[in-house]
Length: 383
Ligand SMILES: Cc1cc2nc3c(=O)[nH]c(=O)nc-3n(C[C@H](O)[C@H](O)[C@H](O)COP(=O)(O)OP(=O)(O)OC[C@H]3O[C@@H](n4cnc5c(N)ncnc54)[C@H](O)[C@@H]3O)c2cc1C
Image (cartoon, rainbow, N blue to C red):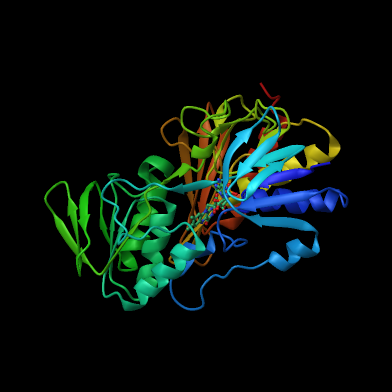
């Protein structure tokens, strides 16, 4: 028996490995990863940039559980022969779980001097640069960019936050949450420049950040949080990839190749409502891994029905989201927070039905909305 091989020791891969072991003491489980620092979690990397830093940890627990962690890169896959070709040689499998996650997007203007934050090693280099920086520019208005801006001002580094959208998170979360988060950053001392596109960054001391409207920004430190791309190039010869380079699965997270499942950020799957879903969130990656483990051990093929959940921490405020959050297609009703910190609950409705919610410092409102959205997803017959 060759056992189960998992590519990627991130949130999805490790969750799958640990649940497999809990459910099946005898199974051979091999986890392959190209990052020498695994295992570690990514969410803490952006939440603070000074003080004690995140560290790698948990390898002992895996060894004790009899999970074999192999350092190396998956290079290609022969699905007919059930063999994974890796930098350390071929590995035969009975079942394969693909969980390679994503890698940061790097446009032409991103040189080595522009920091990205995806790995523990990135975080070490960034923290070292932060300790010597008198100013910073953060490029990219997503969650990682917003958390970086918050962490930099908290580390007492004057920070300019540049993003392409006309308002922070407006397209993603809608007007109320956008206004709230814009105010939060501005009041904490972040200088926000919206509607801005970076033309190039010249790595001098200080660096020059040129915007397409002719503005030049100067900073000791430049960090880009401009999105990521599925890390699936090595699967290019297979039939497993969709046009956007995600690994395409059915509703049960199974690919078209026998014995091959996929989990986490690199996957697109058929969601509970029949739509194609993607997630770049830790909780969903973990849940994917657990779901596949249960199916493998039980020999079942069950649909993954959990709606996406995400969270972010900015300037000490907790943002949580659940379900289908799309201001373009929803009506949004907003209620102010009731706790000691200012906050809000935004509920996203389609045809009068609650399909998603975002809360900022509103855990009680969020809990009720989450229960409703999860209940709806679980009871919708899969199309
Ligand atoms: C800075 C940062 C902060 C974040 N904060 C939050 C947050 O607050 N909340 C939230 O919900 N989500 C957050 N996320 C997102 C969350 O971390 C991801 O959704 C989650 O890690 C995805 O898990 P994954 O297992 O799919 O991929 P990853 O965690 O990316 O793991 C994939 C693993 O596969 C390995 N790999 C890739 N290709 C190969 C190959 N060919 N061979 C061998 N190994 C390979 C990689 O080295 C990597 O270790 C954050 C992400 C980052 C980068």
